Length: 106
Length: 84
Image (cartoon, rainbow over all chains, first blue to last red; front, side, top):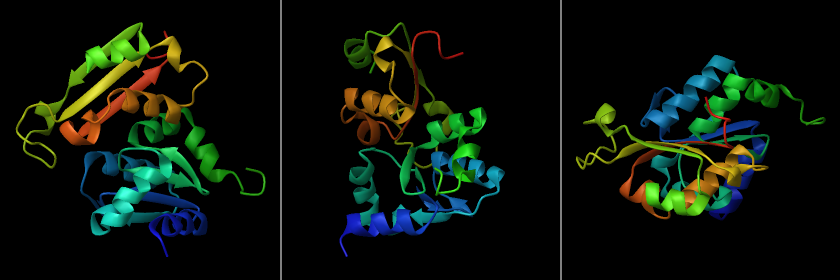
């Protein structure tokens, strides 16, 4: 399976996916840690993908989303944003609405 | 960075803050003193664009600076008057 197919199946097989540096229990970057904190505050379950362990994903995810940086959050297959956007959406309540919307109506 | 952003967006507000000292000695600090930045920018160019597109626009305008010369770039982009 090619890298972009692997990414597609990761983000479609799982409702919430965070591509990050390190793992949720031990982020290796302040921005990744910031998103983990928000997701933990939401109390949602999510899949963390450590890009430091997979150079193909690390480069591939940037092309996939046309977004140059890690972390990257995906909800229901859609790219949401990096740390700044996730924080802003959490503060405004948009992120809560996004993760709690059933897929059928979303 | 100020020059590139001014040229690209004719911003009504632009602040480029060097946060590198806050991150001294940890991952990504290359000792240059120019590793971590925050950009605050307001421009009419961001009207009608969602957050993702606004950041894409800023990143594109900065070319290879984010990720290459600068390890970490926080971006707050809005239309004039939007940012507190």
